[in-house]
Image (cartoon, rainbow, N blue to C red; front, side):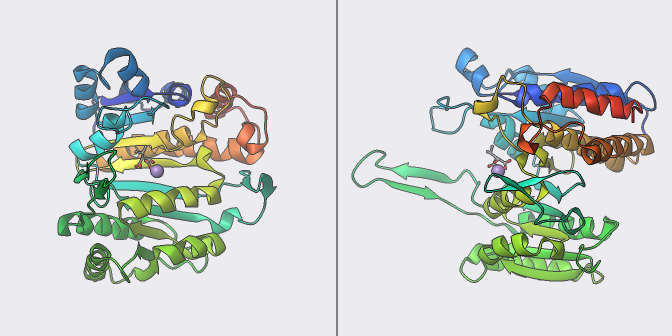
Length: 376
Ligand code: IPM
Ligand code: MN
């Protein structure tokens, strides 16, 4: 149990990032009004717009603050037309850089459909997926795979141009993400919605790729440490249709970096869209949490985007600190927030445009703050 302060660093970033992080901060402040609240908050600028205006993605002090924080909440980075000299998106150092520098090897993406949340197909609201059938967590390897910075081009712009990306799968990298997936399955209170079975599904392309064969062999070996958890396999192409057709089969899913990037956004549709999708980037000593919708330039400055992904990111942040520091007060705060989020989603009182509503970003934050304070 730790009573000294946790240092939480907010990186609002670009576009809609600052709009949703502002609401996340309101929520943290509301939780701090009573009960244990041992955190201090520091906010640092950075991202693509910062790069455009200052010639650097962030200040060394901001980077140092984020790198030494107990937890980071990132809004979003990236802006059209602003890139680094090497062609990477400006602001990448706040996401890809931090994942690499702080060895945040596990990208954790819960995918749960809450009662009261609607999902769209072809522009119309649908009831294809039922809340009781969508409750999985997808683990994506976050530091290697196709994101390994071993890439380049030859004869750039020329007639014989070649571009090469190298996909690296290491024993250590595969073992730790797979072990974490099994540990999450062990600790989750429930198994798959379909049958209650605790199950980890390995998603790969091991019928073709050597790295995936190695990943799957590693999966089989680590699975022997968890005899009570069912092992399950899916080739990534087949997985994309199964997860849409039978989301109730899935409990914990683990995959490599690029495949995980794709399937997590696909799965976000099942939970009501990117407006509800939050991700944790977790290492042994550091952690960063984010709504994964990105800077959304066409919505920026309009106070209209859905802040619930950020609220879920804040909940993950509090729970992570509670669990890693054995701090029941922080777990209690995460539970309070989770309860307030579920109540507001269920009563439909804070529906933003993506949910067919007219509630603004800031009004949705106000509604959640009221719920935290006990307003029914
Ligand atoms: C994500 C994002 C990032 C990624 C981008 C912003 C670099 O899409 O977190 O899923 O590709 O990992
Ligand atoms: Mn992505």
